[in-house]
Length: 153
Image 1 (cartoon, rainbow, N blue to C red):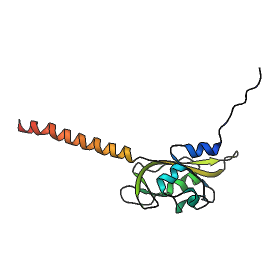
Image 2 (image 1 turned 135 degrees about the horizontal axis):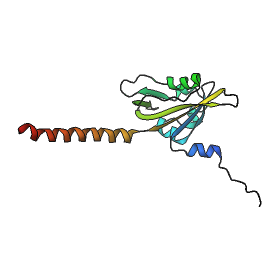
Image 3 (image 1 turned 90 degrees about the vertical axis):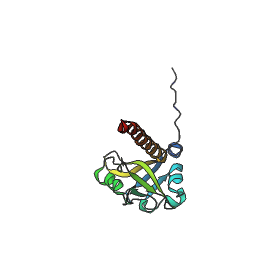
Image 4 (image 1 turned 180 degrees about the vertical axis):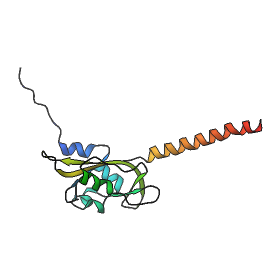
């Protein structure tokens, strides 16, 4: 039986097509990969981001008080383990708009286990947050409406 060759897709094309923002940061803390979704969410083009220190183009904060939170990236570098921001995290865009996100940072290792860089993946969860807010308002209103007749009795 003849050997079949499996056609593989171009790695760069795959990275650029992923539905989440994908950013790869090297050991010198500079951006090496910046996909289209990262451009859309952050407002920085790939040309603006590539080769720059990640702190200049990725601004993470807590949603409630704007405390800067890029420590999870450094933690992935130092510990060599996947890390993530807390649940109430946000990304500050180039235009200084705050967008709720979910994210993770995962180290990239060589064959000897040395950390070569970190891949940061994040996505905009604005719609999910709005849905949570609407659900909470509905439950509050329903609870109030159910209590009102009972208090009259």
